Length: 173
Image 1 (cartoon, rainbow, N blue to C red):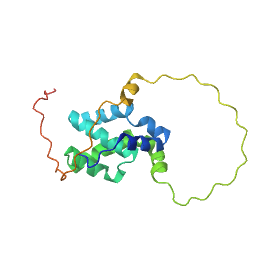
Image 2 (cartoon, one colour):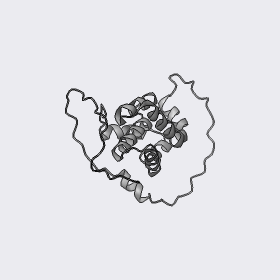
Image 3 (spheres, one colour):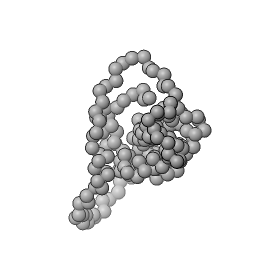
Image 4 (cartoon, one colour):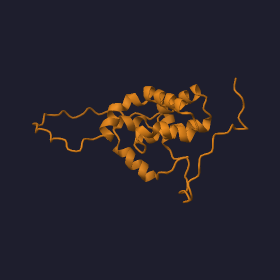
Protein backbone atom coordinates (compact mmCIF):
# COMPACT_ATOMS: atom_id res chain seq x y z
CA UNK A 1 0.00 0.00 0.00
CA UNK A 2 1.02 3.61 -0.32
CA UNK A 3 2.69 5.41 2.54
CA UNK A 4 1.21 8.75 1.53
CA UNK A 5 -2.11 9.84 0.11
CA UNK A 6 -2.34 13.09 -1.83
CA UNK A 7 -5.06 15.69 -1.53
CA UNK A 8 -6.86 16.87 -4.66
CA UNK A 9 -5.19 20.27 -4.19
CA UNK A 10 -1.71 18.68 -4.21
CA UNK A 11 -2.54 16.69 -7.32
CA UNK A 12 -4.00 19.75 -9.09
CA UNK A 13 -0.93 21.84 -8.22
CA UNK A 14 1.44 19.19 -9.60
CA UNK A 15 -0.69 18.66 -12.72
CA UNK A 16 -0.75 22.38 -13.52
CA UNK A 17 3.04 22.50 -13.34
CA UNK A 18 3.45 19.68 -15.90
CA UNK A 19 4.03 20.24 -19.61
CA UNK A 20 0.95 19.95 -21.80
CA UNK A 21 1.90 16.60 -23.38
CA UNK A 22 2.29 14.95 -19.97
CA UNK A 23 -1.00 16.44 -18.74
CA UNK A 24 -2.70 15.02 -21.81
CA UNK A 25 -1.34 11.53 -21.22
CA UNK A 26 -1.86 11.18 -17.46
CA UNK A 27 -5.14 9.33 -16.81
CA UNK A 28 -5.94 9.31 -20.54
CA UNK A 29 -7.61 6.43 -22.31
CA UNK A 30 -4.28 5.71 -24.07
CA UNK A 31 -2.48 5.36 -20.73
CA UNK A 32 -5.19 3.07 -19.33
CA UNK A 33 -5.16 0.89 -22.46
CA UNK A 34 -1.39 0.45 -22.25
CA UNK A 35 -1.51 -0.41 -18.55
CA UNK A 36 -4.37 -2.86 -18.99
CA UNK A 37 -2.51 -4.54 -21.86
CA UNK A 38 0.62 -4.88 -19.74
CA UNK A 39 -1.45 -6.16 -16.82
CA UNK A 40 -2.98 -8.82 -19.06
CA UNK A 41 0.44 -9.75 -20.44
CA UNK A 42 1.78 -10.40 -16.92
CA UNK A 43 -1.51 -11.93 -15.69
CA UNK A 44 -2.13 -9.28 -13.03
CA UNK A 45 -5.43 -9.19 -11.19
CA UNK A 46 -7.71 -6.20 -11.72
CA UNK A 47 -6.81 -4.70 -8.35
CA UNK A 48 -3.12 -5.07 -9.16
CA UNK A 49 -3.69 -3.28 -12.47
CA UNK A 50 -5.30 -0.41 -10.54
CA UNK A 51 -2.28 -0.18 -8.24
CA UNK A 52 0.03 -0.29 -11.29
CA UNK A 53 -1.92 2.58 -12.85
CA UNK A 54 -1.56 4.63 -9.67
CA UNK A 55 2.19 3.95 -9.51
CA UNK A 56 2.66 4.97 -13.17
CA UNK A 57 0.63 8.15 -12.60
CA UNK A 58 2.73 9.00 -9.51
CA UNK A 59 5.90 8.74 -11.60
CA UNK A 60 4.45 10.78 -14.46
CA UNK A 61 3.10 13.51 -12.16
CA UNK A 62 6.30 13.65 -10.13
CA UNK A 63 5.23 12.33 -6.74
CA UNK A 64 7.54 9.31 -7.08
CA UNK A 65 11.08 9.50 -8.50
CA UNK A 66 11.66 7.17 -11.46
CA UNK A 67 14.41 5.36 -9.51
CA UNK A 68 11.85 4.13 -6.97
CA UNK A 69 9.38 2.81 -9.56
CA UNK A 70 10.63 -0.81 -9.66
CA UNK A 71 11.00 -1.12 -5.85
CA UNK A 72 7.48 0.29 -5.46
CA UNK A 73 6.13 -2.29 -7.92
CA UNK A 74 7.85 -5.08 -6.00
CA UNK A 75 6.38 -3.83 -2.71
CA UNK A 76 2.86 -2.85 -3.77
CA UNK A 77 2.14 -5.62 -6.28
CA UNK A 78 3.95 -8.41 -4.36
CA UNK A 79 5.98 -9.32 -7.43
CA UNK A 80 9.50 -10.63 -7.83
CA UNK A 81 12.09 -8.10 -8.94
CA UNK A 82 12.54 -9.59 -12.43
CA UNK A 83 8.83 -9.36 -13.22
CA UNK A 84 8.65 -5.81 -11.84
CA UNK A 85 11.63 -4.81 -14.00
CA UNK A 86 9.98 -6.33 -17.08
CA UNK A 87 6.74 -4.46 -16.35
CA UNK A 88 8.69 -1.22 -15.85
CA UNK A 89 10.53 -1.78 -19.15
CA UNK A 90 7.25 -2.35 -21.01
CA UNK A 91 5.70 0.77 -19.49
CA UNK A 92 8.80 2.75 -20.38
CA UNK A 93 8.80 1.47 -23.98
CA UNK A 94 5.09 1.94 -24.61
CA UNK A 95 4.26 5.03 -22.53
CA UNK A 96 7.06 6.98 -20.93
CA UNK A 97 9.42 7.15 -23.93
CA UNK A 98 6.91 9.43 -25.67
CA UNK A 99 7.14 12.06 -22.93
CA UNK A 100 10.75 11.53 -21.82
CA UNK A 101 12.09 14.92 -22.97
CA UNK A 102 9.21 16.77 -21.33
CA UNK A 103 9.74 14.82 -18.10
CA UNK A 104 13.46 15.69 -18.12
CA UNK A 105 12.70 19.38 -18.62
CA UNK A 106 9.99 19.29 -15.96
CA UNK A 107 11.86 17.38 -13.25
CA UNK A 108 15.53 18.18 -13.85
CA UNK A 109 15.66 21.91 -14.42
CA UNK A 110 19.20 23.34 -14.28
CA UNK A 111 19.86 25.38 -11.15
CA UNK A 112 21.91 28.19 -12.74
CA UNK A 113 21.03 28.54 -16.40
CA UNK A 114 22.58 31.46 -18.26
CA UNK A 115 20.06 34.16 -19.13
CA UNK A 116 18.88 34.00 -22.74
CA UNK A 117 20.28 36.57 -25.13
CA UNK A 118 17.88 39.42 -25.88
CA UNK A 119 16.06 38.91 -29.15
CA UNK A 120 14.05 41.46 -31.05
CA UNK A 121 10.39 40.46 -31.08
CA UNK A 122 9.23 39.11 -34.40
CA UNK A 123 5.87 40.24 -35.74
CA UNK A 124 3.28 37.66 -34.87
CA UNK A 125 0.13 37.09 -36.85
CA UNK A 126 -2.99 36.57 -34.74
CA UNK A 127 -3.89 32.90 -34.50
CA UNK A 128 -6.72 31.68 -36.68
CA UNK A 129 -9.89 31.05 -34.69
CA UNK A 130 -10.22 27.36 -34.01
CA UNK A 131 -13.41 25.40 -33.73
CA UNK A 132 -13.65 24.02 -30.17
CA UNK A 133 -13.29 20.25 -30.14
CA UNK A 134 -15.46 18.12 -27.95
CA UNK A 135 -13.55 15.80 -25.62
CA UNK A 136 -14.03 12.09 -26.04
CA UNK A 137 -16.70 10.64 -23.66
CA UNK A 138 -14.05 8.42 -22.06
CA UNK A 139 -11.94 11.49 -21.28
CA UNK A 140 -14.95 13.13 -19.64
CA UNK A 141 -15.59 10.08 -17.48
CA UNK A 142 -11.93 9.86 -16.48
CA UNK A 143 -11.75 13.51 -15.54
CA UNK A 144 -14.68 13.36 -13.14
CA UNK A 145 -14.12 12.70 -9.49
CA UNK A 146 -15.63 9.36 -8.53
CA UNK A 147 -14.45 8.52 -5.02
CA UNK A 148 -13.69 10.64 -2.01
CA UNK A 149 -11.50 9.24 0.70
CA UNK A 150 -11.04 10.27 4.28
CA UNK A 151 -7.53 11.15 5.39
CA UNK A 152 -5.66 8.14 6.70
CA UNK A 153 -5.71 7.55 10.43
CA UNK A 154 -2.16 7.81 11.82
CA UNK A 155 -1.01 4.44 13.06
CA UNK A 156 1.96 2.15 12.92
CA UNK A 157 2.82 1.36 9.30
CA UNK A 158 1.31 -1.96 8.33
CA UNK A 159 3.47 -4.52 6.61
CA UNK A 160 1.97 -5.36 3.21
CA UNK A 161 0.66 -8.88 3.11
CA UNK A 162 1.44 -11.04 0.09
CA UNK A 163 -1.27 -11.12 -2.53
CA UNK A 164 -3.73 -13.96 -2.10
CA UNK A 165 -5.94 -15.36 -4.81
CA UNK A 166 -9.38 -13.83 -4.99
CA UNK A 167 -11.93 -16.54 -4.11
CA UNK A 168 -14.59 -14.81 -6.22
CA UNK A 169 -12.52 -14.60 -9.38
CA UNK A 170 -13.72 -16.88 -12.14
CA UNK A 171 -11.10 -18.72 -14.16
CA UNK A 172 -10.52 -17.45 -17.67
CA UNK A 173 -9.45 -19.84 -20.37
